[in-house]
Amino acid sequence: MGKITVETCAIEGLKVITPTVFGDERGYFMETYNYNDYKEAGIDMEFVQDNQSASKKGVLRGLHFQINYPQDKLVRVVSGEVYDVAVDLRKGSKTYGQWFGVLLSAENKKQFFIPKNFAHGFLVLSDYAEFVYKCTDFYHPNDEGGLSWKDPDINVQWPIPEGMELTISEKDQNWGSFREYQEKNK
Image 1 (cartoon, helix red, strand yellow):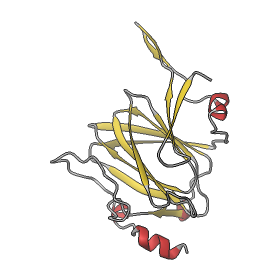
Image 2: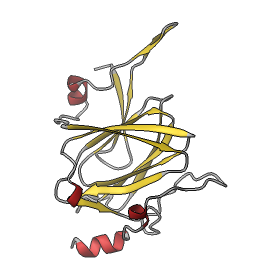
Image 3: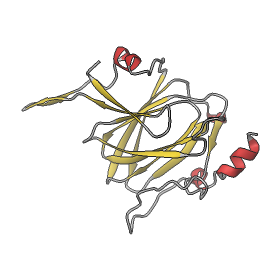
Image 4: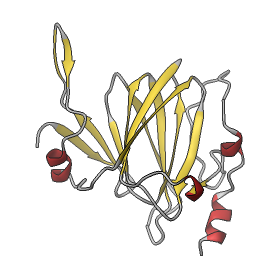
């Protein structure tokens, strides 16, 4: 291995990956994904779709998941900075309902691996951010699920600076609570 550094997280299955960056007076080079390195790190899967979004400061997206077609995701930021969050929705997990967050930026070049059956969201902290991610299943628009970004039972500690105005889609403002999710998924 050696091309990537993998940090395990407080929630089993989540991983923060830092690639090796080769820099000189011209700029830098890094591999953003190499199947062999990720396989050696325990991330052995086929990614079938890449996505990219651009957002302005204060945009909060999430907390999203696919219900019947769950996706593993490998996410990173190519411009700007976001606070990225995953919530464990794996039944029987000792960390069920808990969240973990990590700062991803173009500067730190970190990636965040999020396995299937996690809700996912992020908050843009820079003036502008471009967010890219690989998925192991295709997006199914009729299979979307979500949790309220401000659910008190999950209690994500979003790093919202004083005076920051949030921009949240109507859909994301109307997702239900974790308790409602649990009732539906007994």
